[in-house]
Length: 400
Image (cartoon, rainbow, N blue to C red):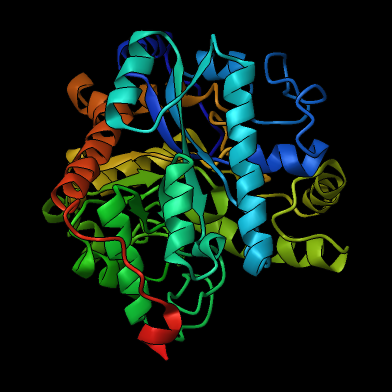
């Protein structure tokens, strides 16, 4: 079915709501795109100018989309191992800090819920950081603490591949969830006040983390498995635990995770990328040329803003409106839904939900309040745990 843009009246209401309760988006891969495309040369990809030819993200489109807070992903690929992964993560953190320093009138670094609120009051986009994959700490709790000290406020326990201490959603089970060291990682994140992000992890890892954690968890960019049966999505039994845990599940926009018809197509497109010498997640211009050629010969099933709304409807029904949010994954995916082509598209999603009868109070929770609250609650748990000393556990000692 072709995408039908929202009625002007709904779009006006959506924009007015976002002016007061802007989006806190859980996941944007702009730093990795800048690394891949220009080696962090911010003059060559000046997001203060129109970057539609290269990126999903620039400052004008963030403003048009009503974005008030962004978790910038300091992601590095899962095949980066050991110290290489740590160094690359530090370079990603450096990129986010460089962006905030370069555009102080638009971006403000944020490390707490109070910082989110202060940035909004000053008309800045609160810029937070999330590490995507526990390979970034190289099995070291001291490295985890160093990332926190540098401003990282969530860590996704895995990316696409298993770790020695946690199973990924898209790899063959080995640990069947978390190992003893994996549980210790969760406890140390609680002690620090770093959100435990369960996007990308297996369902058993989700369940283990929810059993161990004292703090609310986050799903920075995951949708509903009941609506689209992809392992990257959240099963209903896990969603149903969020009211007790206090966590927030942020629906993603990635078509292969939200549209059932897109799953098989993406598998073939990824195989074509690898056959042409590219990583399946590569979004450099040369890689995108390969993608577009494949798409021309094999028309792509197209998701829309309504597809994302279907997930949010279900997630609200199972987890409750206090436990859902938005995590688009812009600049981390080759394809986006119609109506959500880039970061300017959030008003289209909010208008779609208004048209489905969502109240403005509920939408304010979805866009802003839930994200602020989950960070504040994690900070409260960390304060309660400050008498606990930093863990000196090692993977060798706990897992053998």
